[in-house]
Length: 235
Ligand code: URA
Image (cartoon, rainbow, N blue to C red):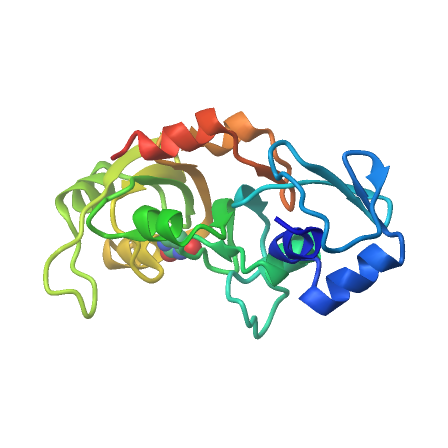
């Protein structure tokens, strides 16, 4: 692939902008300065350096973000900064998107990618990828509450009761595993069962656990093959 196309594919701007970067001597390829934008370059293990910053070529990216509070998942956020404010600008340019959404006040594991097939597979209701949440409740967690959540609660606009797999973690904390991703689902289920969600964190998607990634709120990482396999093991 030519160097200008490679840079563009990685989110370094328009083709024209990328040609300027190359001509201006801002781009190194595997350590060597290249000023010809038409040079044909292999992308296998390609390490770029753009304006002094190292950049590993990736045809597609798969990211995990520890979403903090007061960040919106929407591409056009309205009240709080969007998730892209926490990521390198190149990812917005190459259309990296969140896989599903978390509310602005929900924290925890959020996946992002520019692989449309992956996003679709992960968010498809048919695939039923389990999502694990820990909710802090306003009222105590009772056996009656767990029974309602496990047996199913009726949500407004939903024809059938919706159930999760819920268990108590502490007097005011429970874990709930959901296979659907309905709007405000955990909060609405808790409200329908007569309690209230004071705080919510997503701790796992499929077999991939946030704790295993050692990310502080606001930090992100690339997912490696083994971590991606944990997501696909739900297939
Ligand atoms: N359920 C909610 O209520 N909010 C989220 O962000 C995710 C699940």
